[in-house]
Image 1 (cartoon, rainbow, N blue to C red):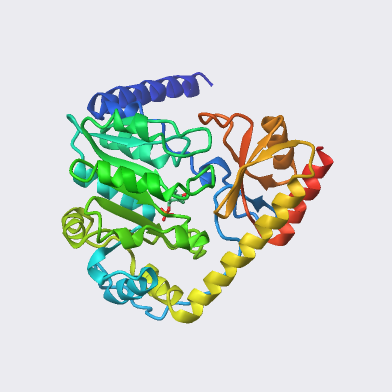
Image 2 (cartoon, rainbow, N blue to C red; image 1 turned 90 degrees about the vertical axis):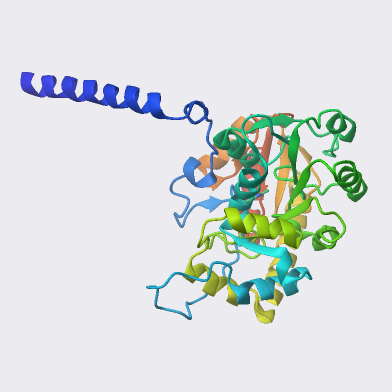
Length: 375
Ligand SMILES: *Cc1c(COP(=O)(O)O)cnc(C)c1O
């Protein structure tokens, strides 16, 4: 008994020594870092079959793929030509304007690592928005400025104008996560003009396939300071693949190529991404988008009849932002019924808001059924 106690004490001392030593070596910004809270980290049993997971903006419609290449002793192509060629047709750009990344998240990081130093450079973004711009800046020890969006979730251009000192990159999420709206094109054009000799504008188009006519890809050749991020994680229903794209002018792409890891995406991912972009699967993706949009219409119509719902924000994406009278209560009650949504209550200007991914029509009905009971 006593021996056990001593051992435990000794082990604790050793553990504290480890913590002290590592904390002395580690970068201060990492000790202070508040990490990104992914849906998977918040709910570890997300893959549980009974769970209705409406918290990660994944596509609920499954496509099945199998690998064509089954041997993996060699490194993959660093920038797979066939994949880039197929994506270039989808976005109507030259292959020289495209870089493949390990998801759009790698794109966020790669651009920041390439354009910002720790001493003076800053990035700017407009909350409420995707949290990875902040997290990446904190990890890379790059300073960040936040300029809150207006009440209608448009960019506050005047305020941005007055805060551009040392700003190397402005991250704009369009359509925006978690609000769901797309931004006024003219305001973005004004911003591109305003910053064309000073800053890079990164437009994160993770959800653009749900409102494809809002894309700004055709501006790549007009504005040399424009970078667009894309992903196969949302509309393409391939979040598990980890495949994204950076679209920019050839000069920027070549610079980013100097910085990116030698083999950013795995052979199996390349194999399946190529299949996902063939003409047959593009039609399937577009039909899935239509289905999701119809489900969204159904859900909005029915949630508007729930007394616990205060307001539903306009959405051009595969999720909706809903303001409740008491979101914590709703969140917990849904949780008990194994329906997981994303709590936004702690985000700026989003009190009592939950972000709900559009699921299958069955999942939408189940959600409505539960919310009706809570009304
Ligand atoms: C989901 C998401 C990403 C991440 O995309 P991956 O390709 O899965 O890394 C990036 N930006 C926004 C706005 C997102 O919602």
